Image 1 (cartoon, rainbow, N blue to C red):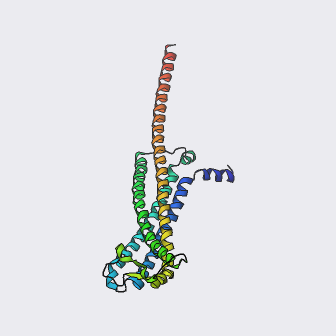
Image 2: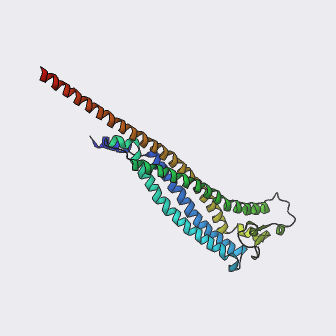
Image 3: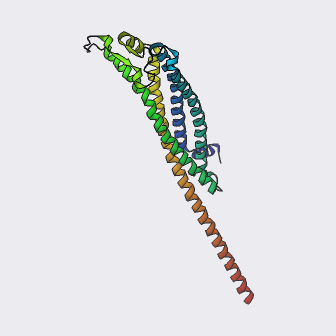
Length: 268
């Protein structure tokens, strides 16, 4: 076999569906974790500079954000490892592996592991649906602030007093009601919207939300692949059992025919 034929045969053994799902999962998790981490840091800066200038008022929020950033580190590490494991599982359960290795056989342990991956991926997919919904909350909050600033700058707006337009972040439960100043009005609000922290955090939250959505799609893709692979393993085990029984019956039939011929030869 030439080099070209070997390359074609090796490429035939690549689980392209699992590869695409792995790339999509890595991309989504990287966007969510990277952009989310930076956006949380920018959010703390905005709150400290404009909405809660007393450290004790937002101390709990700062601790929660730091905890979320540590969770982001764990999520990134876990999904990097889990994606590699699912990709390896795709390599070993694709139908092309059976063509490359004629002695490929399934075991009960292999089927149980595939079933476990199906269940775990389903649980992770449901969990990431919640993460996707949760990541849309800061996008909604920042969009409200941005739209308020855009309305003040619009020449079509008929405003008698710009200072009467305010954004109070205390109503969202982010900081306590006794935090000072707790809200931004008029030109102060406009200045906040023009800061680099606000602009960067707003767009990073959008990208992080998109990354969470991409991760959900990747996990759904993985779930379909794992379900198909599990069905393949189940059918392959039944096929191997049928072939073993068939070979055993053919061997017994051959032995019976051999003994019959020996008996006939002895009588003759």
